[in-house]
Image 1 (cartoon, rainbow, N blue to C red):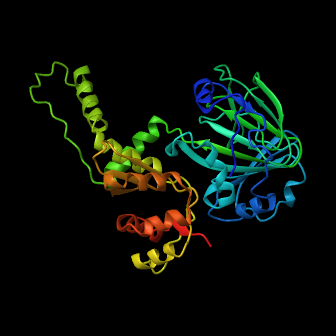
Image 2 (spheres, rainbow, N blue to C red; image 1 turned 60 degrees about the vertical axis):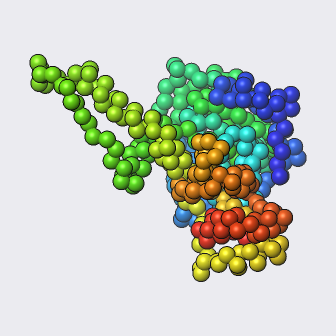
Image 3 (tube, helix red, strand yellow; image 1 turned 60 degrees about the horizontal axis):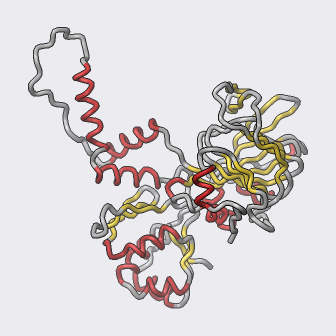
Length: 384
């Protein structure tokens, strides 16, 4: 397991002084870092149809972007290109553990692990993102420049699908080496150019826009056939201008819309479902046929170990200590008794259940029933 070293900072100080405020270079953040994946393995993932990948190249100032899958890289030459593979944590368990040291941020905020391989001179150009990211340097070295948010920066598209920014003033200018980590908040311009063949691991965080939240809410209402209240205007007076939508009318509509999100139960069920739904395809395979309770119990009592599916989003909401728990897994809701809070926490916090924990689950009927359901959905699986 990788351990994050913030050196003179505590996690609390990092959150207070840097999180969403200013970038930070964590030199040697992962001591004695070893890459969990090789460039060839990453290329193998990029050959898969269901895995999102792209190559950004720059030849003599001309930017190009191609999307995968990729079978052959010979046309790109020996320099000035980058392969980026999205959501590698869904498909490569050894790489997925790179997310774990950053779990001081709650599960629902973590997005995915993107891995890039760059040839010398490779990069995607100066740009900015609207989300937080930790960029871990793997093999090789990379020249990074990072700046603070600047309203005077302009954006342009050197390629129809590639958004870059105008030159920026940097506050970090560094050559990163294996184990170094860059933290970059939203809106901070940055550019990384590979010094030699290199790997980078980007732990990104979800930052839904208001538009996304409203669209998600509308989808939830439709899927669950929730119509809500109808507009009413008892006590209306005679309209003096029949073409006018008055401020009072708008206030009534605003109050009506706010009534939806002011419903704590509706908001909790919607948001838990929305935020745990995977953005990228999961490598989920349901066992066929499904396991019976006694089969699962037998395997667990024999010392089997269980692992959680890579990229699976697990969160829960419990309004009050005596209330049932809403466990949200990949957009689905499971109602769990309040007495099983410790079980829910383990499922949300642990990416593996060791033999001792599995035996404890097998000996408790409620825990066994819940775990059997999750295994039959392909969300947990036996480690061979």
